[in-house]
Image 1 (cartoon, helix red, strand yellow):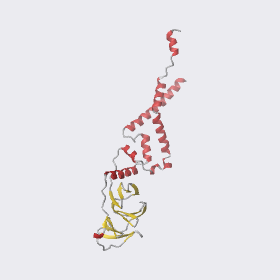
Image 2: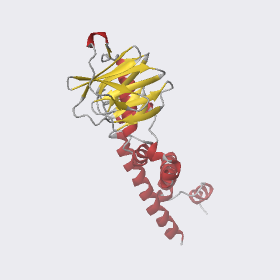
Image 3: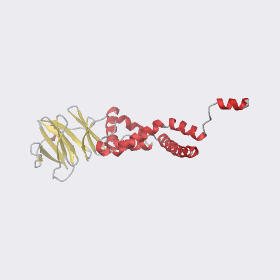
Image 4: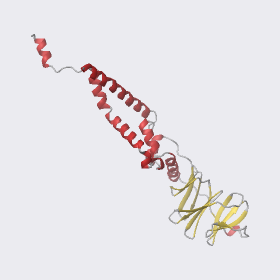
Length: 251
């Protein structure tokens, strides 16, 4: 046996290129494989966790890069801000009611809040829990909402009515001086308030199920996420082929 052969025996056997690349890619992509597998398992049980009804966290929404929905209308009374965005009513940034039109007023009286849209009244407790929604039969849009001595007055198509909170009904048109009524003025939101309500509105549109679906497919990161998902899929395919190749080579 010559010297060259002796040295070759002492050296460890060289691994085939398929085995080497299979190992390198497997170790490199293990984190992505775990995340994709875990998100897939959770998605299979999304209904059990109620993920389609749970709004995503505001910090996650920034990953989408979407513009926040605008605030459609806002009124403030007794230190509480009522605002609508994307047909949803918010009280101090928290969801109060859905399928709501733009607001026309908000007042506080007798321990409750009364909020008016063009077509209905929404009454909440002092803890901002929705008590009742009432749509009057009177034709025309609700234009203004105001109070005087604890009484709630409503202006509809130029006529003045009183809202009976006990029976949730409107009186016949009343003759009352509008000068003594404290009408609810629209609120001017600052940048932080508008961002809070816009983020809440976007969170209603983007739930946890959609976030997981986008995470699973890589769409949660614009452009980059899709390429990462594509690269992970190619790695899986490559490892499948090289795994079969190495197994067949051994046989």
